[in-house]
Image (cartoon, rainbow, N blue to C red; front, side, top):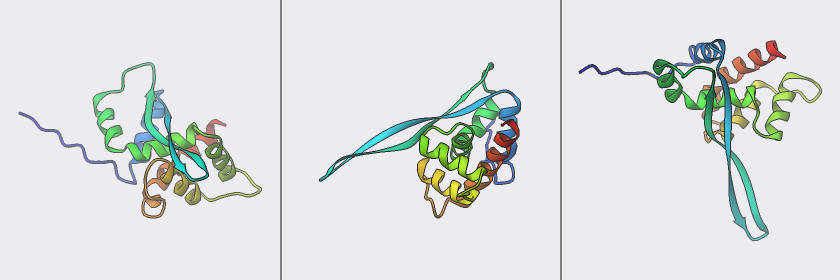
Length: 142
């Protein structure tokens, strides 16, 4: 019996994974969910990233499926930049690219971290390279 171990992609190679998916013609998008919290003043809906959607003309090869599964938060972050699923996130991506009121990629990454269910303080540094790579990719295609 052969056992294959797939290590999560490191910060230096998640950009390569994103690039490979995009070069092969796959698109990344985010499916959202809305959780409603009831407060004394009424219901408060909060939108979160729920699922990463990878679509293309061909089935995703198994080795890429394994890498996608192992690195879902990084790819969710990139998908939030490539195809922002909410108006506020679209606005933050726009503000990261253009002045006035420009924000840094780190600020964008912190907001995306919270949106995908990560800690915006502890996990921002881990997803920032994917956010930067998606910003660069999107900037070339714009």
